[in-house]
Length: 186
Ligand code: GLN
Image 1 (cartoon, rainbow, N blue to C red):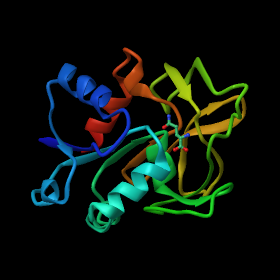
Image 2 (image 1 turned 90 degrees about the horizontal axis):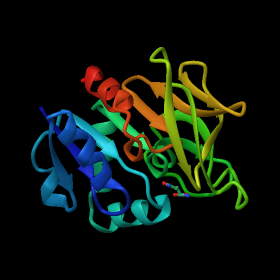
Image 3 (image 1 turned 180 degrees about the vertical axis):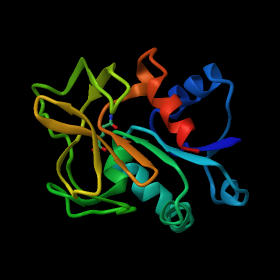
Image 4 (image 1 turned 60 degrees about the horizontal axis):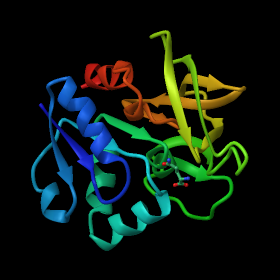
């Protein structure tokens, strides 16, 4: 099994460390030629969604990745990754893969609450640590989307088909629950 990690910008190294700990192989997806082989799963890391979206288009990687996602490859998307999967952004005209029927608000916590750490439920796996950095949250999700996590009455984790989208950064904490759950989906 090999996971493709989108590595054009952002916190991809931290996801690699998690997969190292789980003994799972991965490859960095940095350019179009990295998409010439098949992967068993896809990770979209945190970072800056506008920059990532722009780079993926400039590098001519976007359409192939969209085809993979629409074709059902298991996806773990964190923070900026969640923004890339949203059908709609409430405070931005842009849209990217639009593979999850949900409306996401970018930088939803404002400047005061720019970054914070907490712990909350993740699906049926109990509480896990959660680190938020200029995070989005989900303003509305279609009924077919399963709500995995809620913090302060905002949806911060969603599963739709075999895509997991999280507003927080599981790769920045020690806990491997999220990555294990993702691998179980494959
Ligand atoms: N604020 C970033 C964005 O809008 C997301 C932040 C993150 O990935 N840590 O893309």
